[in-house]
Image (cartoon, rainbow, N blue to C red; front, top):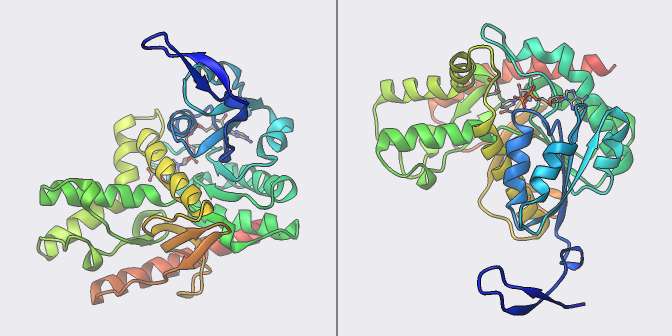
Length: 336
Ligand code: NAD
Ligand code: LMR
């Protein structure tokens, strides 16, 4: 299997394995790949050694952007698919499908405003995963996450292939923001901060658990309240700053790449520290809730449930659960 190749630096010949014969790690499909999140996410996934095949799909043409990515000297082969008919081929055989297809919001809109446009897109992608790659782990980035994850679950149930261990609403950006804002406040490297952010992904449904922050948070009640507010409105901050040119894309791609990497480490049986994601849950009255998870070869290996909460966090969770129940019902009703 080995062939001779030339070193790019010293021109000596060395024994190499052709890229098509490299050990297969994982196929990741990005749906909505030509968009603001899709393109940088594809770029970051191309650089991850665990991704050996990347399928980029969009309703817009993806061939030019695939060609661009395909010149990267990483061990990942990238394939382009576009148009509704090709979504199934992109998904076929994927280990992980990241769905970022759909409209972003504009200043003055809530995430919920996007439901009518984005729910059918997510429903279709979820049904195609069930039909063409039912073992795949599915990460839903498309908003409103709180409602469209329920839409995806119902679409998969209709196909008789729903496995709650394999479906995730991606809330990693809330964790990334929490770590960054806390790190900046405490004047420490944000990468050293670990904090569970539970609940959902919109306004007051986002519940950062400061009482469990590591290292312990240093600051008074007012300070916690102001950082909680900033995490809950982080999305609005970016939407406003981009002034009608979309919502968070680069930080989201970074967060999604972190989440995809955690899923792949689980698939390999080498899980890292728990990551929070919005999944089917019996921890509260809300049928879906983001809590810390450990991943394994079949998706969720362990749902750690609710962390210990102080009184203020219990109140915040109650508010979140009431809102989440409504969002989930909206998603379920849509699919009835
Ligand atoms: P974008 O408009 O830049 O890109 C969306 C892409 O989806 C476009 O390329 C579009 O052609 C494609 N698309 C639309 N319908 C499709 C279909 N049926 N099949 C395949 N592709 C389709 O938007 P964006 O900034 O990348 O945001 C995408 C979504 O992610 C939005 O709903 C946004 O609100 C959401 N988002 C979520 C988070 C989060 O934390 N979960 C963070 C940021 C943005
Ligand atoms: C975010 O949190 O940045 C995303 O959900 C995008 C948005 O609409 O705020």
